[in-house]
Image (cartoon, rainbow, N blue to C red; front, side, top):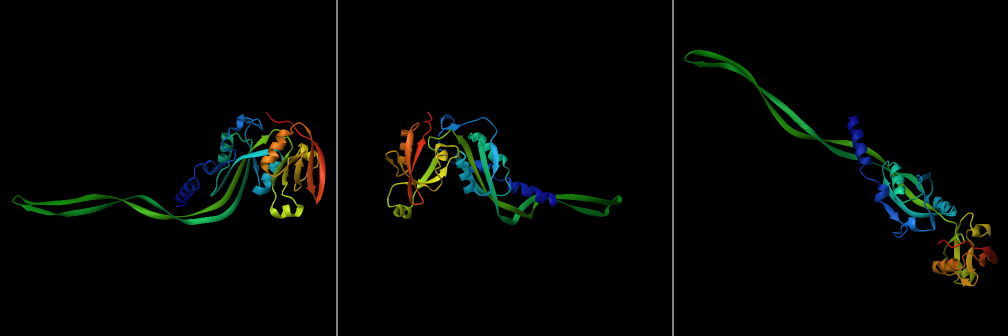
Length: 266
């Protein structure tokens, strides 16, 4: 019985073929990252990193100059990390960041149908009388019946929430921040619809060395007013490899930062 339970547990656990591939979400818009000069693509074995908190772990990756090209999120039993490594190789990721948390234990019964063969025997003996006298007989006949028998086997599987994110290294950035829109309360507080919040500062970038901090508010780059991602991207590309005046708000004070922007990646 123990062997049967073990076999059934293995079948339940391995029922999902490559959940890392099945539940993969692409963040590149279908682009071929091997042809995008913003990224550093290598043929090395993907590095596996174990995380504890997907949001904070991803922020750390962004700060270290990585870009997330995709992710896999699912709930399942015990799943090997080999599926994540295989997916990382397929999409040319250099780092796969893994995180898993116990969610529940699923218990129940699964039917197991096996052949059920039985044989019955019939024994007969006696005498047969005729003109020549009497003849004794004694014999046994066997009859075989083929069927099936269904047994319900208990199972118990621990389930986990899995999160895998796949990363490639960016080439040195022009500025080195990742901005996000401000909410309306912040706009009211600073008295303008301009500006974006600095969500990430990439280590070793021009912004990092100019002491731009997370949660600063970016207002202008030279004469370019920053309202959204489009205006930010246009200004960054326009001012690549130039000395620029970056205007930010920190602690309700307007500050000017003179920064030498990096080169545009062609």
